[in-house]
Image (spheres, rainbow, N blue to C red):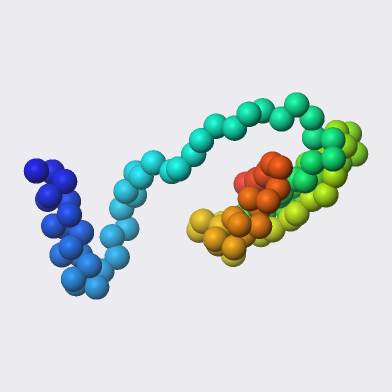
Length: 106
């Protein structure tokens, strides 16, 4: 019954042209991956969320992974705004990397 009540509420909110600001607590699609044994020659993706200093943190990590761990190519991308998910095209680009690092600054 609770699911029906929630669906009805969502329907009424949508009919009024309102946006529901509540967190829906949806489980993200995640799956564990096998840990990397080395970074030698691998391509690293770096996602900047545009918060203050996130770019500085990511650049320091990117340099260290290349200099000390042999990471090969790197792909650096930025989200439009820190509070929103990355755009699908950014996710598609980063999915071609062997691993991805993201950071939150401030």
